[in-house]
Length: 332
Length: 291
Image: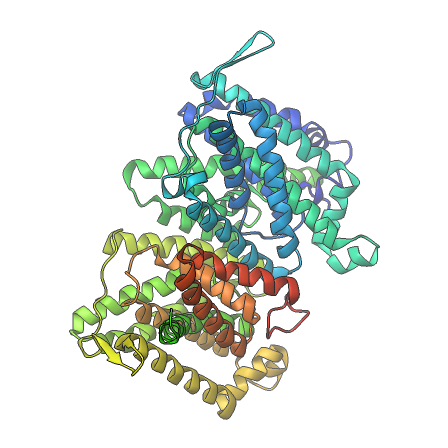
């Protein structure tokens, strides 16, 4: 199969509209995100789509492209947010410097968790990542003097700066949206680079047939560890964005329910597709927004919809759409 | 810090571990047979606790709750297998996991709708209130009962698996389901029963834990993580592993709680990380299947 969802980085359908779309996926995605605040009912929702979109995109590298079902991505989402907040609030680091520091530290955390978890395979991997992420949750809960414990991290502010004559002011929602979008754009460019690189082909080879990849001479264990760290780094950037957006970090961000939400989002949108994570994040958040208007028990509906997706639409909204476009063209 | 205190804490750890053993056993048996990890296991544990509480107040006796809740929830588990999980055999091993995760969302929210979000106290049965003088110290009667009941359940399970014809079919089915079908065994029915048994064990764990913890809709999420840690340490699919690791985790938690209470929730994860670094397949796991 050479459909876009089965391997858009390696096998591109030649000379078609779809190929053009795939070649310009970063720019196109940025273009969609740029008009998002005007498409969605509220600016707050648009910012959340942006943040969760980046987190889920990073996760997609691990789950969609490498086939590793982790239930612990919240650890990196959370650590990105906590490290950003702690750097700003405790050590007075300016926010634009706090972000790269937080991503770096989160990547180290991903290395530590990855060393233990990538030694295991299959279902074991899911259970171990869940347990290790819960360990991070309990450490954050106990280290209250650093993290604020149960109350979450408070007491840091994102200062207004002047960037080459450009005002960056987080109190203005539109201004904030586009600053955060710059981070998202950077993450998308980075992800696209990874997928187009030889390493991107290796991780897909690992997903398709681990033994064959090993027989071809690739170091499967090291590839898994590296992709685990890259995925953690991208997701942690989403965490940094959340800290800048909220100016607080809730403890719940580290809980495995957040990891589960990330898994749900990638499946709703479509694992293994470039823009799927943003579609998934948007669908999930809009669902939550709409359903919670008339019942506080929105989770029961989201759970049911997710179960139906697993049963009948495993490729998600975006993945199914791309498939339909591709096969429609093949028939012509 | 004298010896008797340590022994009492050890007993507490065994009681804690006994509930973990029962819960993790359900998880590991289902995996060993069906190759499915049930992410709704924690939610079903929680539902078991609520069902036990509800049935106990309905009949006026804890013992009816203890007996009926695992059976009813086990039957509910069979329904889940029959309606949902069954469709996913032959698909990616991740799919049942994802499906049961979505299911846990529905179950937790369902309980919130019916029973509310606040915790409910689970009264200890009147016969087991108070403490027993063991000579070196006083130990809660209820915890002693939990240890003994779990020992009996384990013995019954072991005898069934090792000494009966049903157990023979189950063990053979875990090793090679295709051959079993060739030999004329309806493996679908075996899987149905095993899934029901696994869920019933989760519910039993929930009822037993009820009087020791408070009952609330979120109680399952910690239990799921604990059960995962136990099965990973013991080796997924290994019954002996679940028993040894469950007691090990229970005892470590209560021992660490004695010396450094703030580390108590963290110690089991550290234990798991150490075991994984030394033996990725777990203490009693078989290499190849999972690591």
